[in-house]
Length: 449
Image 1 (tube, rainbow, N blue to C red):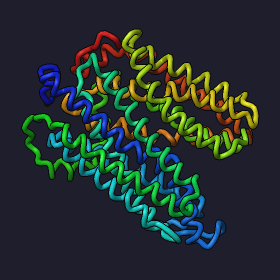
Image 2: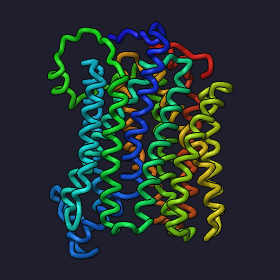
Image 3: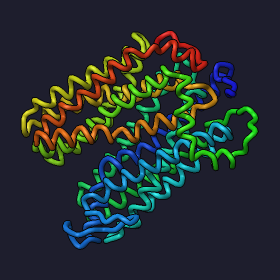
Image 4: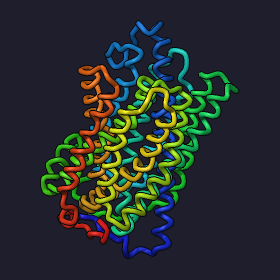
């Protein structure tokens, strides 16, 4: 049974107000992505674990595992992703079933923000506290994202979907980049000791996340849902099988499944290139940390214009063609990266600039396309699959990098091996009949697709 679609019948002014409120959540939680995940937490928790282990050759214990300090954070990431895979479908089912998306979004956002704020207390050898806080923060971060994304089809019509999704993504890059810049000023200034600067930076992300979540909480609205025979408690109790049921249900929408497979593969390439860039710059190009930090900040702010620019292009040549063109750019970027010279900071910045142009647009337009090929009334349930694809995509990319490094001992071969993800993703997306997929899902086909 599907929920009524009332977006087109709502007062335009009220819908625009809700859209602007929706943008602010991306601004809020992107601080966790940039300040916590991208820059500060990994190295800091590794150092805390090293202190607790009595040195790099020692071990720390977590959930029955004896881990080397350098493996502690990566193990936490793996555990958190496994927890997300279990929890996010439950969150999606409950959000769709109860219709209380705003309250569920707020609950996960504020638990995650509180856990992030708690990083201020992690010092010395407190690796256990840091690990538990990270698991809570990262799982709630992903769960809140499921609900946040599921608002997109409800606050925008098919024709404006690309623009709304891209503005949200661009707003997130701007907010996350701004807080990261402020934190890096504190960290690099030497005004306070390094340990305190990191803890203040991590806590600031939680404060930022919680404070700016107030805006979407005031502006987003719940929609009516059909009356269900099962109670919310029964839905939650039975949701341990929800992921399997959703995957089985995807058989009714084979073109949606094909799109999801294409996204998983090319997004795998996107996420792996982003995650591997710092290692490549450090180990192969021998660039300083200053250049790496400068590139991270540049990408954050240039990506704002990139997301909006690709949305503008999509409105003229079609969303699918624009995403396909962005995959061509990704392929060229990875190929060119193979030939970068050691110590050539200008060349690295040029590559980072190209990545920034297509990064936000690829992700924002993919989210927009996916929102069109999922059945109405089940947005959160299906966006849980989308988020699982996004969060779990690092596995395949990491595997390819590991094999390339193991077989060739070459960072250049490793980076160029990622071309396979963009080529396969391009081919799969090319063969998806998007208009038919949209109609099969029961949605309106926009003019520019």
